[in-house]
Length: 455
Length: 115
Figure 1 (cartoon, each protein chain N blue to C red):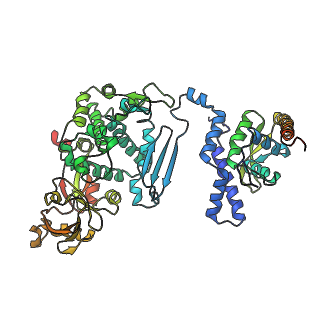
Figure 2 (figure 1 turned 120 degrees about the vertical axis):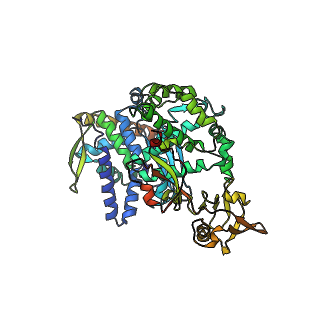
Figure 3 (figure 1 turned 180 degrees about the vertical axis):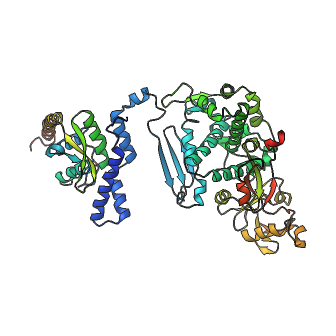
């Protein structure tokens, strides 16, 4: 039976206190919102009060002796359209930001995975840290070649936590995974720049985002997530479902036992050694191939082996719509992202738009003889689709493009219609094809390595 | 804690809040919110307790057995936690009050030697 401690009723007591103060304020003529706000102001920081009361009974030296990873974890969350989305991890807290309506608007809520992500960093990143990032002083430069672990594994674990803790639905997670997997799969820059190099160059990334599909920037996040998802599937396969990535985390995130808030660094060899403790395999080659080799396509085996496949449909997922915001999204079709006035923000290398020599900074003025708008772009893609019944379907998409004071005509040869990535249940699964029900029509399938073909 | 009259926050000597809480409990068991209000009222609103700071202070006093806590019903019929002065707390209050009076007198002598 639980022994009562003086701290047991503290949270309720604080709530009662705030209720009384709020009622007093209401009695003095304040409105409900003002009354509650004034009560909170008079009280001060609730979390700090709880922490200080806790410290009375559990002195800090004792807490460290008892080796808690942390005594408490605090989220600072700013909701502001001005400050925008951000996340900064610490071991016992994080500083997070979302839009003003991040938790009230259903569209904005599609993007609310950052709190579980930063929370995960308390272990993977702050406690276990790549040796190159665990510098002794501020004068020593950080070396980020293992950021695909720091950020990539955190992204996978944080996304799983986001679903399990209710920040996202499983469907929202799959939509986000489909989008990031497709973005990597349709990223031409992967033929010259490997994942490790995106990690090493992390400190000098940023700036103008144009042609990021060729330059690549922070791809170690999403590449790392796919890598660790694949590793998870591989562990399950090698152990006949007896073990998973969870077993790796039990080893990797428990070095030195249950310690207090300290940093324990690791290197590539430790990752291999820890994975081999879970199940013997040539993990060094597995990891090296995915991090240092060049490949024209992303590693989607983690997705396919977990029973899903990447498909393209003619309607964007709610996640992709939320992520794009006001950006006009024709990335996976024409290879274009534009503002709603037609100004081109991004052109995917080797895409139909790239072949037609469209460039970021130019402005599409007309499209198939009509003034540019998101609707006329969508209409043009539909009219020129191979399956479209009109004889116009075989024609190029005609655009008038403005660059400064110069205007020119451009013909874009493309007949694939709109294309947006989704995950669909593999046909050999007994689960219902959720994505198929949602997509108006499946246009093409990127990965068909269904495990049942191998028998 | 701050003084309201000149709107300038004043750091009081450490332990002062604990002393004020002990003094407030002399008349009988009181819940947290009422303690805050009593301190404000009895100082004629010069001392304003940041209400949350009361609770760590109450826990400090409980840990030293100067105060005990029990569940009861508040004036508006809600369940509340009432704090009561223990015999040890009563002795401590007397000792601390004497110390405080000596300290206040001594500082007054220095600041206003002819007063």
